[in-house]
Image (cartoon, rainbow, N blue to C red):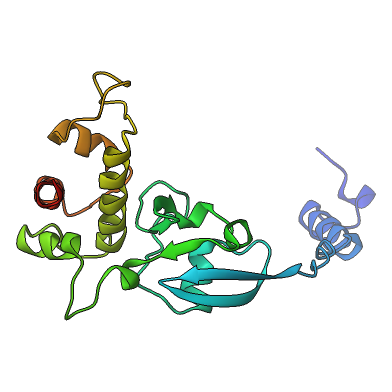
Length: 210
């Protein structure tokens, strides 16, 4: 049995004293110095947007999508995944479809950009817009601007003879089939599932053009 005279304080008091001492001598953690804020590099860029020349001064990191939405207030072009996977931000650049979230504004200097606002008006719809309405090619409508711009680009690709993975003969004129249209439109996602109606709308417009 331990002789209490050799230990003037109890084991409990000793532990409390040790914990208090450790807390008092601990060095408080300090936050890391914040990274210095980079000064953005601003560049002037001129775009032909829906037939009107627009000159902007933008951070060189600004995407075409953000230039359209935040600087020109053309909010018909939607921001979806912001990673080039959903197609909601599709616009036409010099007649070719482009996912604008992956293209910098400064890369398109002098280009002719067409957004959903430039395809038609409420009183004079583009044939593709009218066909989407007739075939109920949309439900919630969020992806619809990108779907329509992409569909217009798809018909241009077929007209120019650009093959796809679904083309049986890459040297022949692509056929206007459901398989071709589904393959070419596969980069435009519709959470509502209106895919078959979208194919019908594109097929109608293609038939009207032939």
